[in-house]
Every structure is written in C-alpha cells, then in structure tokens.
Length: 256
Length: 237
Image 1 (cartoon, each protein chain N blue to C red):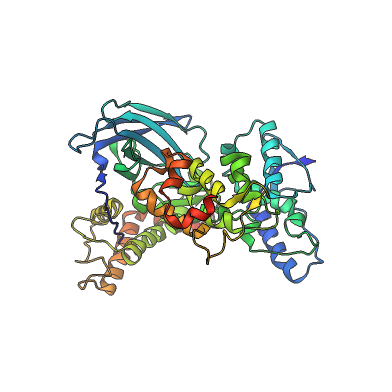
Image 2 (image 1 turned 90 degrees about the vertical axis):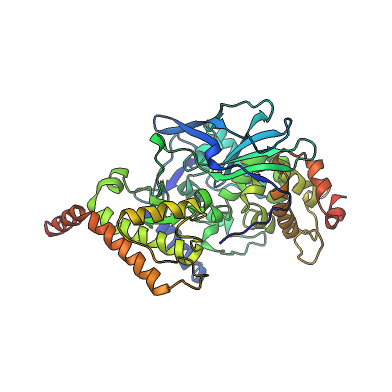
C-alpha cells in the first residue's frame, strides 16, 4: 500500500466535490467540461489560483480556472491536440499565488461515465503487436485498463463468444491477483482505493464472499483462501455466461 | 523519396527476426517489408527520404517535423502510430545501426521497434527524438538531441521517461540551462556522472520531491532554479 507524507498540510479535494464530463463528436473526444468544483469549507485564500490538468501517457495539458474568489467554472477545455485523448486522467490544483505552494489538490481522477455509471474496467484498443490483450494499471489510483489489440475488430471484442470465453475470465483472474498479491486491499469492508471497492462490489454481486483479509501484510491473510476466492470469482463469472459458453462449444463443433 | 508506411504485426515480426539474426550474421539481407501484409501506406500520403544523412538526432527530428507539417499533420496525428515509427526505423536501419567509424552496432529491439508501452516509447531511436522535439522545439531540445542518431543518451533515458518532467516546458528549460553548454553546443561534461553533486539523476529526484509541494508548472525557470538546493549551484554557471 502506498503511503505519502504531507508536511505542508495540503488539503485533499475529494472526488465528490468535482463534476467533470467528456464531450465527444462522432465518437472522438474533443473537449471536457468542469461543471462544478466545490471548495467550500477548505479554508483556502481568496486569491489562490485554481488549475485543472489533464494527462495520459505522453500528453499533458493545463487550463486556468480563475481564483478561489473569482472562479471561472464551468470551464470547457479543448482536447483536440492530444495524441491520446482516451482514458484521460485529471488533476486539480489550488496554488498559493506568492510562493507557488500547492494548497489543495485532487489527483488522478477520471471524468464521470455517462448516465452516472462508472465502469470498473475501461477498455482501450491499441497497438499490442502480437498480443491479444493486456491489463495496464494506469487508470485512476492505478486502476486497471483492459488493452485490446487494435487489429481485433471492436464488434468481435464486444460480442464474439470465443473472444469472451477466452479473454474475460483470465482478465478477471489477472486483476484480482494483482489487487490482492501486488497491491493488497487495506480493508475489505471499506477499501481506501476506489477501484478495489468497485471490484469487491462486483465479486459480491457474483455471489462470492471474500475472505476476512485480502492484504498479504495482515496476520489474518491466508494465501490459499485468497487464491481460492479468486478461482471462485472466475468460476462464478463463467457460470453467469453459460449461454456464451454453449455458443462457443457449438461453434467449435460446427468447425466455425 | 518513397511514401511513408505503417508497419503491421507481420512486418513487425519479420523486422524483429531480421534484427535478431543480423546480430550473428551481418551479411543477411534486409527483408522487403514495403508491401502487404507487412506494411501499408500511411494516409495522407507523406513522402520520405529513403537514405538521408543526419548528423544528429536534432537534424532527424527537424526533418520529420518538416515533412509532417507539409502534409498538415500535427504531433497528435503521429505520436501514437507505433507502426509508423517502426517502419521509419526499418527504412533507416542502416544509419541507425552504423556509428561514425562505420562499425555496425545493434542495440535492444525497443530502439527499432516502437513499444506500445509508453514507458519504453522514448527509447525508440526515431520516435523518441521526434517526441521531444515536437514538445519543446529546437532550443530546449538541444540537450537531448545533439548526439548521433544511433546513440541513446542518458539525458533522454532519465528525463523522457518521466512524464511529469518531460511534459513541462519550464522544467525542460531549467534542465537545458543547467546541463547544456551553449558555447560548445553539447551537454556539459560530468552531468551524467553519478559521482558529481547535482547530476541529472539528482535533478530528477529533487524535482520529484519539489513537485509534491510546489506547482512547478506555473513557475518560471528562474523561480524553479531558485528553489533548487545548493548542490546544483555549480551547474547554474
């Protein structure tokens, strides 16, 4: 688990204080709008400057949002010059004018998904050479992003039963293994990392209860139990999609 | 001049096989990958020199910048096209693997085949220099791009892989002020030495600490230099 020191008493701007959406034209991301930024109660000086940055991979762009006393919000930012407009992350900074010290910030957050739903597994099509898929832990708070080879037609990745059966169970296994054995879940009842919470909720939705600890640093952690839990989740996920499996078998028998 | 192409997975495999084989047998012929299914033509059409002579990475990056601009292409149209960069490295492979003494040197595959992992992207001998040049222009790129095109230097290795640093024009200007000798047109001697105080690795470490506290992006190069610790004093001269 990551721990950071905060000697300068920077305030953390929680995600619920921010409303930000992405604007698309013909399926292409063209801009974003910062609809709301609630900084009330954080005791920030009136003349402190507010900025929003968006970034992903090699790209970074910054926009001024005025000051605490005179905010320029809502604010729309042009994203057309970014080489990687998909899966952008955002950062908000409140900066002391005199010494450029950061007074408050919100790091690595994503825009709201349409209709208020947030996917636990964003998908990105990209050049993976001869690899079919991989998982990139470069989302918000190092959340997983499923990367699919861009040579694979999008409709195959979304609907083909063979692709589904071969890829998604292994993706789930990979992510849960990473979450437990690489990162560790600090609390199964109230995880400090949002994407851990989202995936645990997904596992509960599948009807699989997690062990008491999913943090290898805990005394209560049992490696075999955690492994068994991951296997059970993958099994239940496959059970939820029996029709896909039957369709897959049918296609195999028909030699498709 | 030939039309610019994008390497496809089959072409990438063939190119990789060629790179692996030529290490042990320098006499083998480069395969013809300028056809289907190995590569396809880039659209819009961009004409590119088949065998240019570049004295430095800067000359190469400037040349690429020019031909892209002539085709109305911005950096956002080409940066993410890994197959394009792989194909250019294939096209210029001889120059990318031949040093000034005429000896051939074959480096790791990521120098020639552009990685889809952006943390390795900058290691590509063509994509990396263009990426830096397109972000920072000629003046502030000199410290990274003054070396020959077949060399991957520590300035690129230490800085280009750090998104926070490479994306910030003012930080790159500070880096150039500290470590580039305008008179000689080359990086300052000793900047890469781990033994020297205030070397480039220390710069990375110190900036990574400062950016947690300061809004480096909005600070002028002078303001950033002023908050650097004493160990960087000798580089300010």
